[in-house]
Amino acid sequence: MDKIWDIISNREVLEINQAYFGDSGGTYNVANETIVLQHDKYKSEVPVYQYLSKPIGLNVVAVLLMNSDDTERMLRTSFDDIPGLADGTSSVHDNGNDNNNDNNDDEYYLVRDMWNHRDMGAFQSSVTMSVGSHDAVFLLIEKRKGTVSAIAKDAVSNSLMVLMN
Image (cartoon, rainbow, N blue to C red):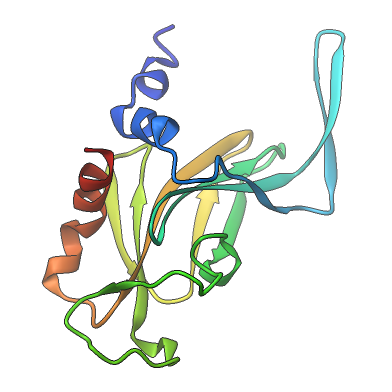
């Protein structure tokens, strides 16, 4: 139990689990390559990696990057591929920029590592993570509009607190 206590008692992850924003989420990307996982008499063929997402709020999505492979992998997700961030049907937060044009140059994405309770910063188009063998990375990603400023530093953790209250 001590090995998994930090995982099952992670308050931020529990809040994401309990959040519902009209969709319970699902898989949005899988590897073509598969691997066979076996435990005792149970055997399963699974993709070597899978990406799952769950909308948490307007332009806020939880993303799980899972590596089922026997070796560490660099997993990259493009923000354009993530449902809820990529569809273009929802508006992004307006940080003082009143220009509602189709230019995406003023969009950026705030990323938070949920396992480690750490804001990773602002990213432009994708994020790449090193994911250990049979491990996962759990991220909270928020789409923003405007220029990246000092205010953005704590925006992801503040957004999560606001959305969950």
